[in-house]
Length: 238
Image 1 (spheres, one colour):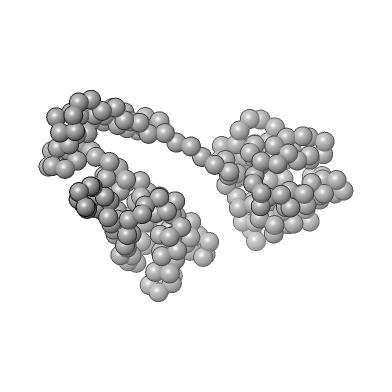
Image 2 (cartoon, rainbow, N blue to C red):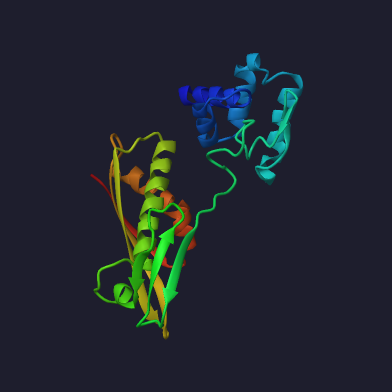
């Protein structure tokens, strides 16, 4: 209840004159019917929960299943409340509707005698070299499978943290290694399996409940959904 109250305050603040912290929290919080009702009941002094304003919340509840981009009016302030995070200023720092990130590669030459570089939009990877020998041999350097493994490990670890939090547990540490297997199948290369080795430290959680939560995180992880490969997992509490 304390977390819901804090979230409600943040969203109520963000509907008027928000601080940066209000905006961030408002865009991170889960926007569900219970929370909307809670705001309407608990914060009428902010103009939310009275007359036409509360009607706007009811309207938002009706259209939320159709997407996050419906125009609303709060106290005469017309704005795209969902995509702007209930603020009057520009895009929200956390867009609840969608997200786009870019990775790029440049390859020169043939498949075996050529080479290339990979980069990411953030600049974390910038012109990092890769080649046939780096991918299929023992030459030092990165390759697509290694990068996919890092992405999957990172995505799964966040998904598991979120699932543990929803179940009332706060992990102290999550360590994940994703092993991506590339095999020649029927004359063409295919990523056949991804195996997740997971070690987690979580107080007051038994192994059975942990395995149930980890399985849910594995299935719900966005990168897991991307793979057609068989995804296996060993998850241990330590």
